Amino acid sequence: QVQLVESGGGLVQPGGSLRLSCVASGIIVSSYTMGWYRQGPGNPRELVADITSAGNTNYLGSVKGRFTISRDNAKNTVYLQMNELKPEDTAVYYCAADRSWVRLTTTGAPGYWGQGTQVTVSS
Image (cartoon, rainbow, N blue to C red; front, side, top):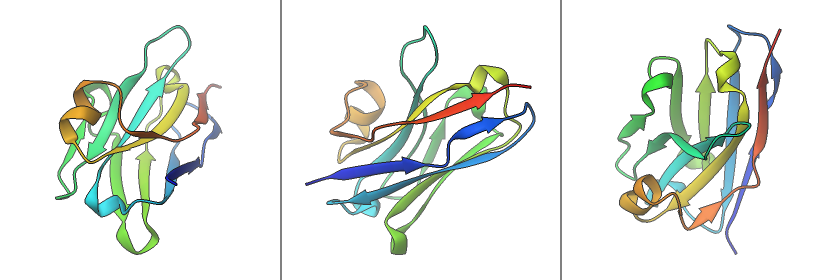
């Protein structure tokens, strides 16, 4: 049984930082494309960042230079380091996994989802 468990969300002031973690069980993160999606109030779910099994990374334009996706193979964990946070980054952030980079990044329907963690950026 595959489980993706996110943590690290919370309330932060604009300009602050958070690091989200996604601990995986039932899959090996280095063999999958892993991604972080988010869904803000009244907005559709969007892909924020992904990391391929080869270690290549991709980012949503609005977070490029501020967010960094990474993984720790020994811990079977994927991270999303978020710096210079803005109010528009407020959303529920979801970890996702799929063997197919295309399915994870283009369909919005990856094979596996976490339960989500709330990030609120507000003064």
